[in-house]
Amino acid sequence: MTTSTVMTDSVRAPETVPAPPKWVRPVMTGLGKAGRVAAWAVLVLAALATIVPFLWMLGVAFRTPADLYADPSRIAPHVWTLDGFRAVLTQLPFVRLAVNSFVFAGGTTLLLLTVDSLCAFALARLSFRGRNAVFLLVLTTLMVPFQIVLIPLFLTVFHLGWLDTFKGLIIPRSVSALGIFMLRQFFRTIPRELDEAARIDGAGPFRIYRQIILPLSGPALATLFVIQFMALWNDFLWPLVITSSDDMRTLPAALTLFSSQSGIDHAALMAGASISLAPLAIAFLLAQRFFTEGIATTGIK
Image (cartoon, rainbow, N blue to C red; front, side, top):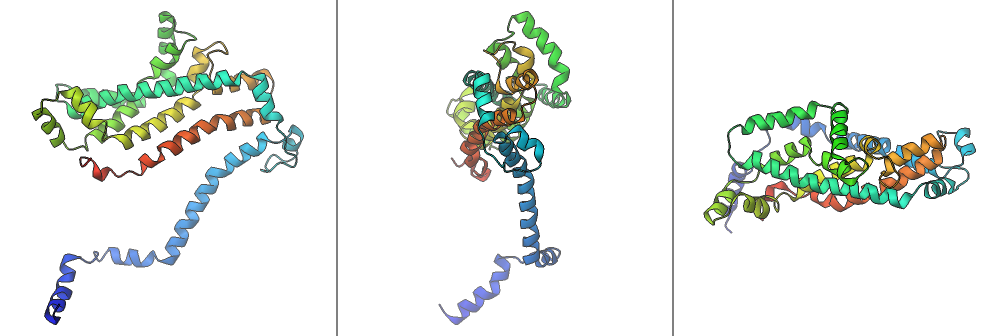
């Protein structure tokens, strides 16, 4: 390489790699070491604010009532005991309650993903009269609290004879306006050229949905799965209203009744809550890799 070539490259470099705008330079200069330290401090404080309540819950689960009432603010117990876990496992049909929670949360979430993805596909990829009006109607349901529709849903389930059944638990909760909105917005980012190429090959709408849209929507589906699974697993109002026997109750509903029947046993309640959080942590860890998957590769797969 000659000297003239090096000089030419050095002269053209600013053209190929533009310098940051003038208004950005002071900000970038100001966010030096002090800015990074402040950012880490905020992250540490936020992490502590999130983790400390869970650590306190675990500490209460291993404490005796006397130790808890002596100093409720302390996290680590003076005397470790498993009385709280024994009370939950012996006084409640814990295995049956856990199975009911898995069936309710898992089954409802899978059915919800199917229904919401079909609705979102129709609103995002198909053209029909009144599509925007239907989408606005779906959005308006987000402003309606679930407690308002609780009584109409209960009467409907009652007249269908679905009280204290899995059908009554799952089917009324199998649609989510939030899920339709999230998936519809994600489906709109997928290039429409893929649909046109599939139609040239003779594919219909359902085949496009099944073979193109769904395989490219892994991050959105995984995110919605975790959000809805966590919400349904922790839901106690709907199972508490619909179910009336221990054979159909879920963990949150049973723990609520357990606290009212046997008094306030904080160790047992915290032990049950700690055990019930394990599936949520597992579900989040299994789907975490989908959260970081880039959407920029959509259409390249």
